[in-house]
Amino acid sequence: MHKKKKILIFIDWFLPGYKAGGPVRSMANMVEYLGDRYDFYIVTRNTDYTETVPYVGVTANQWVDFAPAVKVFYCSGGYQNLSSYCKLVKSEKFDVAYVNGIYSWKFSILPLIALRKFEGKKIVASRGMLAQSAIDVKGGKKRLFLNLVKWLKLYKGVIFHATNEREKEDVEREIGSRSRVMIADNLPKKNMPQERALGKKVGELKLVSLARISPEKNTLFALDCLKQLEPLEGLISFDIYGQIYNQAYWEQCKTVISQLQKNITVTHKGIVDGDKVGETIQDYHVIFLPSRGENFGHVILESFMAGRPVLISDQTPWRELEEAQCGWDIGLAQGGKEHGAWSGVLEELLRMEQDDFDAWCKGAQEKANKFINDPSLIKGYEGLLG
Image (cartoon, rainbow, N blue to C red):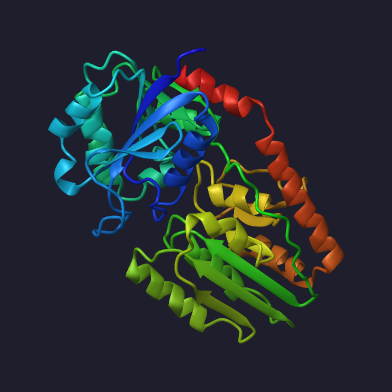
């Protein structure tokens, strides 16, 4: 029997955490899918994103059996240092070291320093962090950070993991045109939620967003689209699930919410556990997420898997959705004219009847099946990890 390679992974947050969103889901899906091919050793924090209290029932600072072929080392605050990481790197004969992310001092930079003399394959996953839309947020600090890393030559001999051609171009633009980049798309959850129908009446529309409330996710823009709707007959509800990281931004959102027509209701409903995302989506007609940029968009795929269409921006890899009758991907033009196309789709959805809605749900499920059953998904990781 062929000996399984050992993959050492550094990532800021991992299960049972879920508040960091996409990166956690990407890694969880990867190890779930590939556990029959590789043994994974994951080094991470013992707290969730934005939390200071450790996970309940999780032992810190030792290897814990998380799942078949997956061990996790949950680091307490005092263990997140170069000396500890050097010991972990030498604790096993690892074949591949995989660093998730770009800007984290404790889980991107320190691991790369600890891996300077590592003789195996070194991989860095950029996770969309080098996209222009991502760099624009706190751009000065990020540019300084990137310059420091390149000056220290921490990316020497590194292979960058991109999930699509656009992300590959981002790496080559920001790190250097001679960077070695391999493409392997994100993997989905293994289990699709059980198909569940939802009633759709003319004059009724249930929208949902499952993303942090932030400028990057364009929450305010979504609310402005609702505000720009012509006086309408019917009821629209928009439930927002996600953390509020910027209170001033949320106050702007609340101002717009207070100006909406009386038959449009918006409710912030807290945070959904990662395992319940698909089930939650099935309570709504459409995901409404005009994000400024996604290198993948796990919640978009989960919506397709749940059999629900999406209303998203054209700044994600999910394109030409209307042709596949599984959703709409609309531009984020400047100058105030951008709301028209969005409002038009919202009005179309409000007027939609059950038969038409069922057809869009079927299209969403077919989109998910096509992606999940693509044999190139696994081949991409076999090429990346070796």
